[in-house]
Image (cartoon, rainbow, N blue to C red; front, side):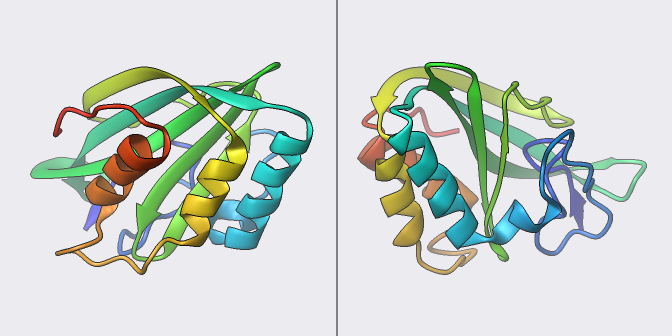
Length: 164
């Protein structure tokens, strides 16, 4: 199965051959599942007194192959915006673990978005780091991308999420 991940720049997600690996200017292709790299990034943002001020909860449809036969399955991910300055951290949970990316501008929307919610938040990057550090392995039945995103939003970032 091929599905389009949260961001066109994000590395290939688990179980999907051919997803884009063009991560954009300044991005490091090694970052996509390097949990310690993510923790270091979030720690560095916290040390610079960056606070997350927006959470973009983005859901998109899966497709099969490059031509894109639409499938009635959804993929969930989050982009966090930090301030002061422009800091964007994309988080995407899959069989490979937590896929992530960082940039100073907002990531492109995925192909076939079906739901987008934007929340005003106030959260330290260290809260997100602690959640990521404690993440259990992916499981299609009990710990998938939807549940992971909803728990991050509700339990860590303290926003109420409509079940998408």
